[in-house]
Image (cartoon, rainbow, N blue to C red):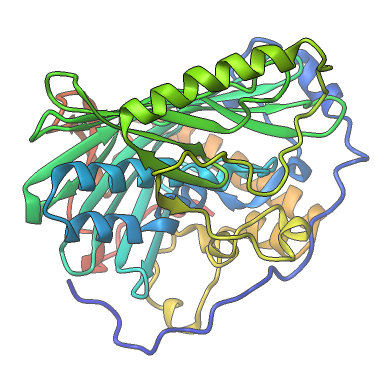
Length: 422
């Protein structure tokens, strides 16, 4: 794989302007019409957004790519599964405290990222508008892995919370070991939409399957529970193909993950349950659970497999972005002649918002969305069909589900026939 032979760029450590206060916005006046509805069809005011497209937000899956490289170096399939399961959890860790909504990608919008320091290149395309589907494909620069999938974030509003269920499959291939892993992401929920402190939880079952060995890692992202005791907790087991427990994994998706012997874990859970039942009688439920520092209770004999990279000190000023997220919209000089005209970095409404100009961001958002509607209307009058450029629909080779597959030609840099979407 050819990459740019330039010295590693000096990357940004903040955005051009801090975020606006959302306190003056009545979210209720916008959302009361939408209870129980799907939100992808509703135009939200730009002040509720963060200055990234959903395609860029997806790229944050790659922040802890070192876990994939780590999986590649080990000869034991259970050790690889630990790394891959940790990668699956780390991929959703950037959601923590991210209460701004990413911009909905326009049909045909794309995003690429080459990180030579992290050993990957990534590209993604918005392949469908209704329903909104984003397809992505990443590869190791040493041709040492492929990571791909498509996500349809199904958003529902439930009165006090917004729930995002990310439908779609994620696949990771390690050619050196001739292995493929697939999984789906947990549901993400933003609470206290109308009043009070916004907070985020993720819940649901995530099953990482090794299609070669039949091993699987069954993880439960736990819902918060009445007293906040379970907030952010993840736990589960790696099982062999006959469903025998090989080891346990536990931790929090906002902090860290450990592995430990399955019997030790089960014994710990049993005694923990007994203790918490005694305590429960004198506790009061709270509006928002407040985690304090490193809150994972480490079971003796555990091994740390992942710890989140700390957020920068200025994160709260900049939409709770991690350092990785702050760098996603960077437009370096040497990119300007190279990027396709559909890349999110060139999208004017996001650029205005990043600079703190909410009025221009709002006007541009309306303009590009209107342009998208008009071109859809014109297509429906003619017999012209929308054609995706870099992905095609097909069957996922590992679990036979319907998927969007990469068509292989993006990095040839031939962008002459791309649509004018901005």
